[in-house]
Image 1 (tube, rainbow, N blue to C red):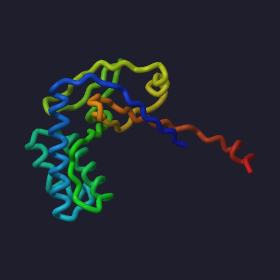
Image 2: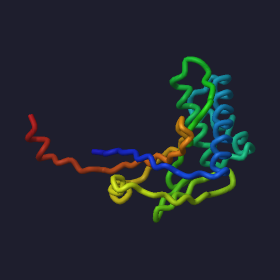
Image 3: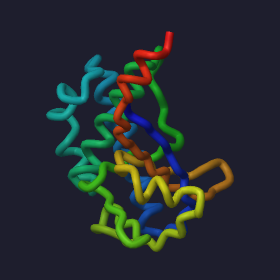
Image 4: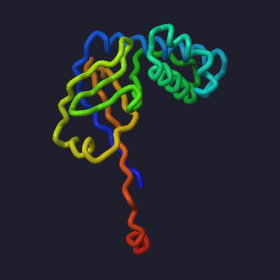
Length: 166
């Protein structure tokens, strides 16, 4: 059985991270525009039409791929063409972010940026016992930035206990 959890951690961001989010948002809208026009909803099919454009815009490879996946995810649910007014960035561990010794290293348009992170006591068990998965950088409506760590842990099921439950 799998147990999942997500823990949002408030971040202090710099101009480079803000510029990365802005460029990601532009890239996401580009992906949406192209996919909508071509009636593509599959990220593998969309990739050859937008990937080089995203790279030329200045997005790193992994963020370009993330952008393509996010656009296709949006379009699968859309009844009309979406307009991207704000967005989050989906980061993939360890390709586009890593976390070690309370330092978050995330990919930006100018390389990796390292951010010291203070982990709340309630969240320590997740960082110590769970595997960190794909996570999200988001700006909330108040203007605060959060990195939401996603965790996964395999928990063995007790077959004897299941056999006793009627």
